Amino acid sequence: MFAVVRPDSPLVAALTSLPAKNLVQLPLRNSLDARSAGRLASFVGKQKIQLIHAHMARDYPLASYAGLRNPEAQLVVTRHVLFPLNRLHRITLSRVARVVAVSEAVGRQLCMQKIVPRERVTVVHNGIDIARFANAMREFDRVQFCRRWDVPEKSTLVGSVGALNPLKGHEDFIQAAARIADIFPAAYFIVAGVDVTAAQTNRANLERLVRALKMESRVRFIGKMDDVTPLFCALDIFVSASHTESFGLAIVEAMTTGTPVVVTETEGAKEIIRDGQTGLLVRVRDVGALAEAIGGLLSDEERRRRIGQSAREEVRLRFSLDRMVNATEQIYQESLAPR
Image (cartoon, rainbow, N blue to C red; front, top):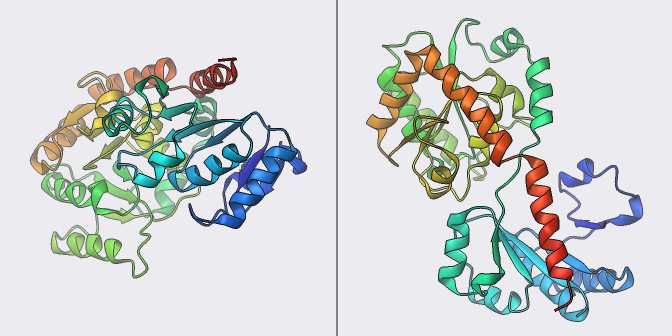
């Protein structure tokens, strides 16, 4: 196996088991990086690579060019988001062997655009390394976590994880928190995520909202976390108030730790959650319904435990890393089979 990554990719540290000669770093600046495209095509030819798998839309044209220069190599791409592909991708994906969609919703979007034939689109849900989360749960120290983030040790923690982007619905989450804070004085609310805007505008807006709602003592902004597993272990309730989700990886990660989840009815979330059994679904942008669902779980510890246990079992059955790897390997084999 070979991997071609950007120099700043976190995969560089994660692929230490790969022989150094099999890990190639290229700038891959954008979809029109001709220099990287040429070097990638030469590398594919030199190593006699049979299959190229690209994961990001900006890499599709580069991978497609490498495949065009090496017709014996089959091209597979993964589509992670719901945003429509552009006209350039209609060209670059014309000879793709298979498109992997991370959810049925993404698969439907691809088919609606008619960029690739329906029979070349296969849904493979994202997988979670369950063993890694199990180890994190065994090693987790809640007292230390609470002290680090200045929340009472006997608090009930309700949190949301995601980039500080308006589409993630953090504003709705904070407004819902304000509605139930007085009813549940032990509840503290955590927002974990990074604001990628240069001026940190999104975080500033959220902090302004917290002040306006007089929630400064009850809300914590954690910012960037290299490893989110301790947070999921700490939370008593996980909330995703997103306005749109193609899948919802953070939702499944929370479920893996047995944390009950309250999530909005995005296309991706509806594929993950069985409402009332493995989590609670509420309408998108409905702050009242969000607050009611969170409050209902805060007032019923037994229900939280029951839903959390069902959620963990659901992840084991449907979203394990082994299942995802096996399904992906099957796609590779089918793509390489003689036609």
